[in-house]
Figure 1 (tube, rainbow over the protein chains, first blue to last red):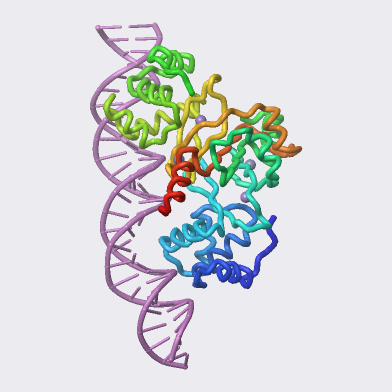
Figure 2 (cartoon, each protein chain N blue to C red):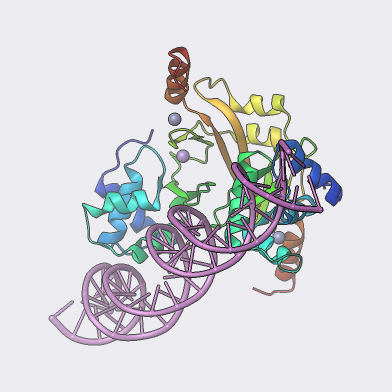
Length: 155
Length: 155
DNA sequence: ACCAAAAATGCAACTTCGTTGCAATAGCTA
DNA sequence: TAGCTATTGCAACGAAGTTGCATTTTTGGT
Ligand SMILES: [Mn+2]
Ligand SMILES: [Mn+2]
Ligand SMILES: [Zn+2]
Ligand SMILES: [Zn+2]
């Protein structure tokens, strides 16, 4: 998915946005910039634990800040905790797939605006600022596993 | 949106599903059947308060049960608490619109499967069981209010 | 490099959300 | 109606998220 991002690049993001470059912000941004899948808060905390001492309140505040400045996007989930991903031009808004079996969340190909307009219909009452599409079902590996189980008579 | 549902109808839903007809379940189902917009847990609690004495744990358990039996659908939101709506054949899966200003959540027209397949593309690795589309922006009334404010020079 | 002002973080306390175990109660079937 | 089973209420708990305030760090100008 996203190419590996170097610390230098994350520093640039903060600079361009006009945010001060604290070690905590750099660390959080690095996590988000170097993951292949969206991460939720506990994932971020786990990833940070080894790298930096950081208060959990600070993580919440940093994520809110990043979201306000549109550095990151928040992905809603019915599971309670939401996910976050980097919001750059190289990583435009796109649908997500959540496997009901292994709960893995993965990114799908982005929609073009013309595609989006096709199915959004002629509704002109709303000004659309963000479109979130979450698809769920069974991912490839879980589907295969299910097939094999059925074949061998398990469950 | 949905036509007003009578108690008799909600009883039928429970009966068809094979669930026992307790006052608590009937009350929760009536709330969901008679609202024009999806409701979150606190909305359900508020609506129930006047009608029946019910423990909050029971509400959670009833909603889980209804969801498991596909009587209701859960709508994810980045706001933390999720929303619920009745899942009947008269009320098929459809996109939702959330106003960033007034936080009103409203239902949009459902997509046909052929429409959905158009923009889902040729991805065959996933078995798709559920598609959730959440659109956000400004609703008609909030957009008008904003316009008026700008015209009169208010922020 | 230093200093002062402003910003960010840590900490503690608190609220809300959601879950679990168990005892009491109510619904269902015979 | 009686007994069995399913459901609810209650209490307690853990996790998630927020807020106020003291402390520390960053920043920008000297
Ligand atoms: Mn993504
Ligand atoms: Mn709806
Ligand atoms: Zn899977
Ligand atoms: Zn609105």
